[in-house]
Length: 247
Image 1 (cartoon, one colour):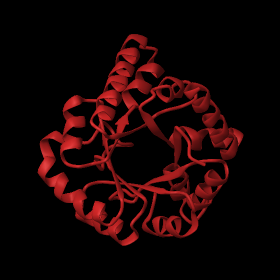
Image 2: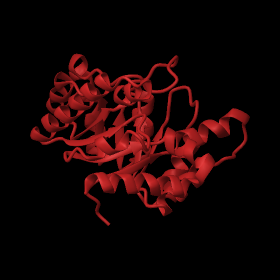
Image 3: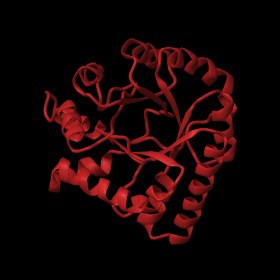
Image 4: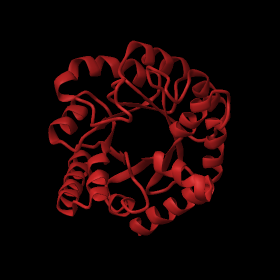
């Protein structure tokens, strides 16, 4: 089934829970298979340099065991490029990464690093991976992504979600406007637009209503909500809200 707005489910934090105690449970690949059954359109997994959640064998198993696309999030390093070229996932999303951060903070700096990033993504594109750059809704970054030949951008919704959680509605609405304008600018350039980071039941509707957006990638909230309602129910409710907003 082809949907107007796709849902990618990030399973990183099932692996976070597993790694907190060691061993193999809970299994993030099992979570991916459950998400697939529950109507997810894709699975996102971020293999970090320090392997704090997803591990190398998780990527190998995901490639072997899921039937929906894998979106492989990674930093622009030679180690990660080699792993991506070995597995050739459907999609590779380049993200900024710092060891001291708890989660990805801010978007990738493309405008100041165009030549290196263009060279970095070229072999991945040639291998058949769909390249996405995780960036802020900044015209300079959007236009730089276009110039280096990335077909997809994922706009960082973290600030919008943080302002909502803080009750700062003026700042939230201003950030939402930036996202709307960024999505339009990107679509006008011919880029496919995705969004993600921090989205939950309260914040997803205005984002899902942006007509240029083709995919949302959501993880931490869904895994947390699954503790109370189950993963299938959490995904189903997110899907319902997305489809209502789209309608």
